Image 1 (cartoon, one colour):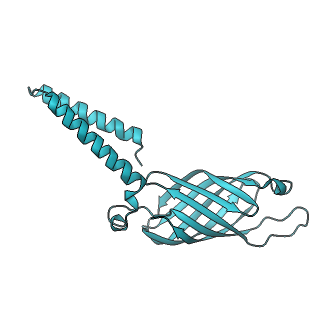
Image 2 (cartoon, rainbow, N blue to C red; image 1 turned 180 degrees about the horizontal axis):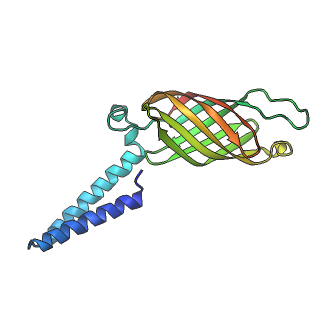
Image 3 (cartoon, helix red, strand yellow; image 1 turned 120 degrees about the horizontal axis):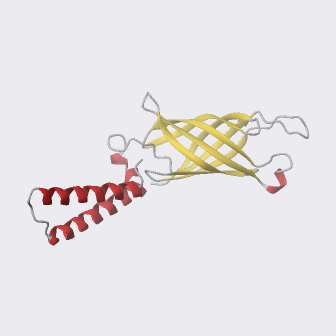
Amino acid sequence: MISHGQLFAVVLVTIAAFLALVSLTGGVVEMAWLREVEFTVTAVGLALAYFNLRGWRWRWLQGWFVKRPHLWGEWQITLNSDWNDPRTGQGVEPINATFSIMQSYTTLHVRMMSSQSDGELVCASLLKKEDGGFRLVGTYRNEPHIMQRATSPIHYGTFLMDIEGSSNAPTAMRGHYWTDRGTRGEMLAARVGRTE
């Protein structure tokens, strides 16, 4: 996606090219034009900022104009891990957690919370698959609560989840994860709340 700085640079280059073309063809650059250009650039910039933050989520734009899944909201996660408790040598029951996703058109922020730890994405991306669907891919830092750290240290991991349902109303995500402490598992997410 294009960043705000890149967009600003494109606008400046466009204005400079327009003014240069007018001068080179013998035209006269009038100050009134600059005021109109300034107003136009400001209006377009504000419209793009609104679109980036909120407008892209409008249902009537989804599918034909916006081809990006709308994930903003709360997701209930079930994790099935191959981790074994070092004290007992036993595996763990499925872990229930919550994904809290905040999203603009150009950014994605995911926070995971469970009764044992909190995690936050270091980086994330929505990848378009060949069949037109999407995958959510992310690398995260997991911080177990202080009383859990003797057996579960702070660690990093990566997950890959296929998004199910339509782009304007995804209903589930399914995938897997692996960590730098040598564990891995499966993840299943179901939407429980959506921000319009």
